[in-house]
Image 1 (cartoon, rainbow, N blue to C red):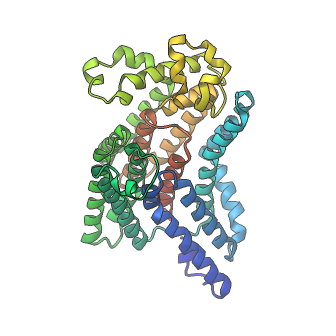
Image 2: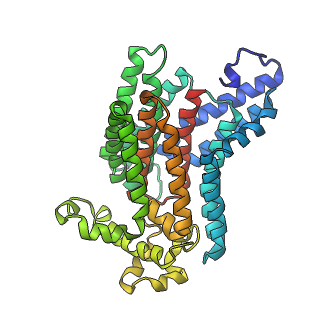
Image 3: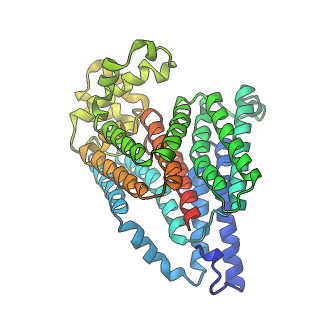
Length: 414
């Protein structure tokens, strides 16, 4: 139970009022995050940061402030916490052999800060996913989806009228993915409310349809894949929880393990009839990128090229080990595959730590009853599927969106 809901030792006075105002501010920041992403498609870290500062401030003002260090130690001392901390530490060490250490350090901060913000919210113990807030988040996601669909349908004419600079429709890929990962805990929460009304379940259905509609309207093949994987995994886990969890674990390990040869595998095994159905950047060009970064991963298999080096990998000395015809694609900024980026930048050590963390998370999820396992396994599977074919692995908006989704799930358990 969260401090704000506790019937014991009720907080009164100016400190309590300030704490309550801060908690409200933090909750509003989390609720408005999907709308912020529609308006500015990299704003998720800012909203998560505002929320974390507000909740920590509220916790400091509460009588139970002294419990925060204990909660932090408890979270970090778990096998999952230790493995994630070990990866962050290894990633930081790997910057020593980066060709651009300042840029790599900024990339590390872009990963670590959203993780720290989500952890701070959990440690504060001030946020609770009350029914009213779940409904508000559902409405915010639906509105963000509708606004994005309207803009995409009009060719972004609204932003052009406002004199916004260069306009590209692919910027709505990020709001679409954010809407998906936030919708999963929201749909689950609305459906499982102890006193759920028919209107709550109707709202959950409208939310699911809105997210699917935006995924279909956007240019993001990753979002469409995520929606499909989410739906299939959720349904399968609800009826066959152990089998589905085992299948997800096997797929996860195999995908992480084969990342350095992903481009070769896709070239040899993916039929041209399927390949030709994809757009240019999700077809052969994507495979060519995997081939290029796969050569980087195999050139330094143990420790990689250094964290954050994918952004300018073509300038790294390791690029000399890549075939001349593949070097040009090292300049695309990232390999469009999270496991491959982990291998290329942090080597076998980093990839193994991430694999361990994923398996530990799946082991924790496996202990849940099917009704609680299904949506969480769906989030894991959808997020991993998106990361395998989508954007850069450590982008702050992506980590913040996942962190916010986990926060909503965790707060519902409190």
